[in-house]
Amino acid sequence: MNDDFSLILFTIAFFIGVGIVIWLIESISNSAKYKKLKPQLDNLEKSIKDHESKVETDNFILDERIRLWNNQIEQDKENIQKIAKQKSMGFPWLAEAYADYFSLKDLQREEYLTNKNHPALKAAEIIREIKNKKYY
Image 1 (spheres, rainbow, N blue to C red):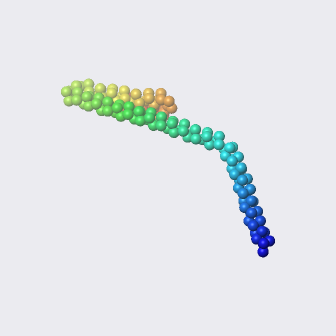
Image 2: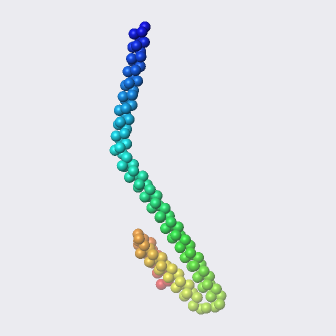
Image 3: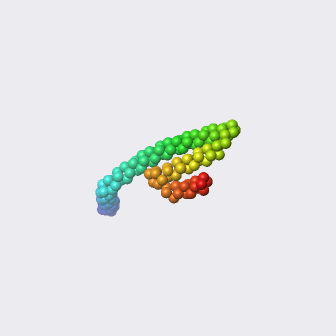
């Protein structure tokens, strides 16, 4: 009976020992993998932070452009209203003033599309064609 108990204890201790050795080998292997992949992880985290910073900067620039665009639209509305008020006073050159105003606005759009960081040449060409059809 005592031998049976010793054999059972030895078997249990053996399997526990084997389990511990397997766990240690796996831990060492995972540690080696972590050390190998850690620089890539750090680089990825830095890239994510850089990208988030760029997105934040781009959003700020976009918001500023939208604000400027909205201000330009409001200014255009005011200018059109001024021209319309002059019409009620009976100025005969009003139609030409309207045409000149809108021609200049189209020219500004065309120049912006042609000269921006990533030129939209096709869009600028379309605006040029429409402008020529409207005014010439």
